[in-house]
Image 1: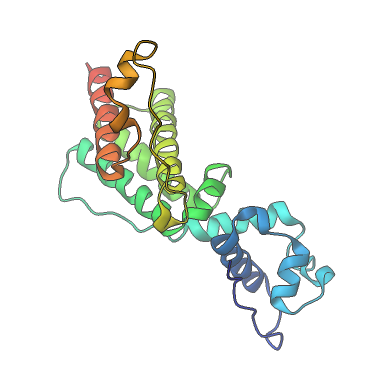
Image 2 (image 1 turned 90 degrees about the vertical axis):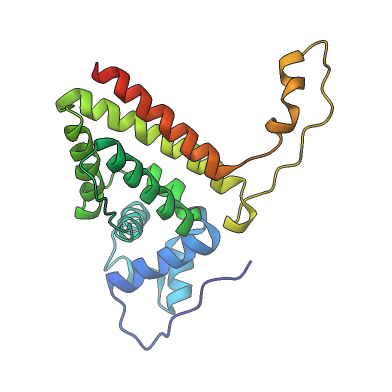
Length: 214
């Protein structure tokens, strides 16, 4: 696998350069590849010099996550319907996941307290507020939606070769007498239509919210 380009050692070492290098490394090889020693080599600097700008790897990964989250593109909806806003926000999250497939798992495991992190939280809570949900119930609904998005998008990334994932092979023959219902849909189980499945699941989530409204 191709490594990220090595930056010129003539440039002064800064926190921004270190974070940029971490983001490039994550995009090329995943967050597991990040280490202070590896980044120092990529930047043409001594390992200990990085600690003058970033205290440890955990903080560095948080900074990289915030840098990637800041790349989330704002969505615009010509509608006052909360359902349309939830759909648009969910699709914007999917777009971010597809632009940064290797980093998406990292984003899912970080608590982002920066402006970039709160921007997406505020947008989600505003959408639930449009539907009449506030406080604890709105937070619960937001977390349920996040769980759906993370689950379906992580599967999409993992099974999309164009995003660096692995194409899954089809299922082998199944014992019809033991698993009759599975045998009936064996073809569907072995294939993915990510566009359809994302929209189908999103509509199920919205339908559940509508039911909770009444």
